[in-house]
Image (cartoon, rainbow, N blue to C red; front, side, top):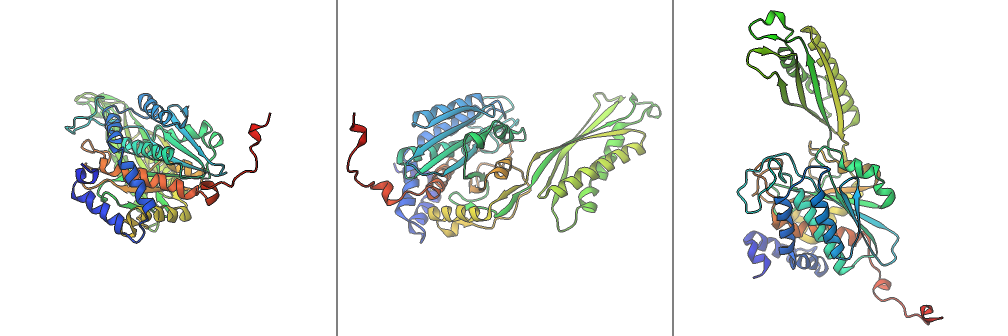
Amino acid sequence: MPRAVLYGDRLIAHFFLARTSPAFSPETMNIIDHIRRYQEDLDAIRQDLHANPELGLSEYRTANLVAERLEAWGIEVHRGVGGTGVVGVLRNGNGPHTVGLRADLDALPIAEANDLPYRSRTSGVMHACGHDGHTTMLLGAARYLAETRKFNGVVCFIFQPGEEGVGGALAMLRDGLFERFPCDEVFALHNRPGLAIGQYAITPGPAMSGGAFFDITVTGRGAHGARPEESIDPVLAACHVVTALQSVIARNVPPMETGVLSVTRVIGGDAYNVIPQSATISGTARAFKAGVMTLIETQMKRIAEGVAAGFGATAEVNFRRIFAPLVNDPVLSEFCADTAAELVGEANVNRNKPPAMGSEDFSFMLERVPGAYLVIGNGTQGGQLHNPHYNFNDEATPFGAAVLARLAERKLPRTSLDEHPPERSGDHRSLP
């Protein structure tokens, strides 16, 4: 039965749109068709990854699966880059340029609530962000490029560990990622729930905010809950700090700038009748500009220390910048949009997606090498990201694999000489 029929009317509609789009060419449609030939294999890989999730920088099984697949397709494999990262290198022809294609490997510390035959077998860990799908799409692109070789140059398949706030991109960079595997451009993508299957979106310029995590430890003096006068209550002080922190964005960040400060956790005490010695406030801050992030950090420290002091307590702020702002190269953003439009038609590509306050450590790679980060539709089913009911939509796999592969082909074009090399007058290899 044809794969399009198995996926139902929605995919049939996209399949027809791609064939009738003004941007359609047999070459680009053949990429999707080619990848669909082995989509059952890709679905099996994705669902295996989903069933066996691993947290950041501990993706040993995942990395081994990736490396074995790449080796089976004749791709040169480098393991252990940045810990559990894997880089595959595929060369064809004598082109001097190299394109990097990147996917993330890690899962999240979330207990899965889905009732799936391939639900997570690891307690408290699940692929709630679709990295299992991203890894599979890049594997699909790698298999296609290894089989077709319709490029002239080098493609580096970068499988990055630890994207979820544990420094995986920086670990690979510290391990000499772009010194060992120099790339002229680097591209990545992320699935987007709510965006239809077969649609893409991209944001030229600043696309995702920089992100920081913080912990504020408020220290007072513990006492019996029935004798509060003998205490310096850190819980009371912490609650006032949380309230006061709401002024950081509202009264310090210029209205034309963008910033977010969210307190996501307050922990203090272990017993009903004990005023604890300390309480901890934790959360995240987001901003598109380094100056705004510095302002948030400075004001947070001033407010936390001042408010705590007003209660006779002290406050210590640990502010950690985890993600840089993700900035897409405007020219390469247009290149990505043009490539996507080749596959599915202009009507299915949003070239000016609004920036997002989420963060992504692919940003650190874009600080070193020009590139762009594309969003791909995950459909309306499967839940939202970072949710225990989330599930990557396997219908998206051919579209993700195809756009990654086509980016490499268009950046590393073959010439007529590559396809029909001139005849040589003699072959010196036959000389003694």
